[in-house]
Structures are given as C-alpha cells and as structure tokens.
Length: 228
Image (cartoon, rainbow, N blue to C red; front, top):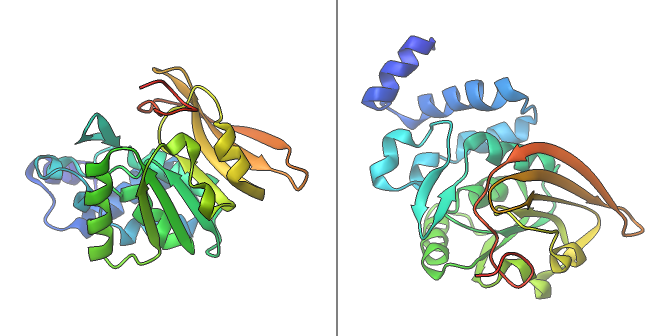
C-alpha cells in the first residue's frame, strides 16, 4: 500500500481492521526494528480499535498514544511492541503486568505467554478490561485492583514483568517478585521524561540493565512509586 493511499484511508477511516493492522506492522513496527515474528503475529491477532474509545476509532492505528479516561492512556503501538519484544517471551512464561489500562497490552501478552497477571489501580479500567478480555476469549488473564508498585506477591515469582507507567525508581517489591533469569521492562525517570529499561535478573540475583531509549509515560502511583 502506497503512502498516499494510506493517507486517504486514514482521513476517511479504513474499511477493515486487517489493512490498518498490516500497515501499522509494516510502517510502525517492522520498519523501526521490531523483528520477533511471534510479537508481530500477536499484533495481527489483537485489533487495537477494540481497546480505544469510540470517538478515537479513526485514530486506533495511529502512531501515538491515546487517552482512555481516568488520566490514563493506551500506549503508542511501537512502544507496546518494543516492551513486549524486550520480555523475550517463548510461550511458557508467567507474566505480571503493572497497569492494565484498556487491556490492549494485556491481550498482546496473553497471545505470547502462558499466564498474565495484571494489576490496575483504577477499578473502572480494571472492570472494563476484564470484561472485554473475557469476551474475546482470553482465559489465561487474571486482573486485580491494587497498588501496582507492590505487585501481586501471592502469585510470584514471575518469569517476566512489564510496567506500563513511569516510576522514579525500580520498585523493590517488583524486583523481589521477578524470578532468577527473569526479565523486567520498566520506564524510570521523573514525571516528564524517562528511560525505558530492560532489566535481567541473574541466577545470583544480580541486576543487568539495558537501555531501550527515551520515553514518556504517565506516572506510576503507589507506595513504591510516585505519591498520589
């Protein structure tokens, strides 16, 4: 599909999600270095338009975050893909997600992992996402309302942890709940600009950091994050 054709469809609204998804994958993900085919396939299976507000439907596959209410956003597709790829999922993992939001990232993870435990601080978002994900057939997702900075200790340890809000530090509780040889992806910085980090825990419990670049997320509120 040529660029001019895409712009026409973008203004008028694509006729079907499949064309929008394939364009997004080609131009926003693969072109920027996302190479994991299992991650790209997960994006094909999860229509982003099902997770945005009705008034934002024409922008569902745009290269930007979108508001979902309660001061929260659905992340830019590339950021979702980058964070997901950095988890290095093989299919057998138990994953914890901090910040369920609309449930889009949750659904992507559910396509790639054995189980997904997601913690959301806003009850309305958690309820809406849970209903939507169940309706879509995701029976390997479990959601609870709570302080995401404290994780979900009773279900730990986790093979991978993804944090979809910005923290001033790496929350000790989340690091503790990460299994040896596990991976965590988290944005760390101030309330305005952060660095997206991939953290790996060695067999001895040591931390290996890898920067994935600059980013900007909503703040992670909680006991081990930002104050309310």
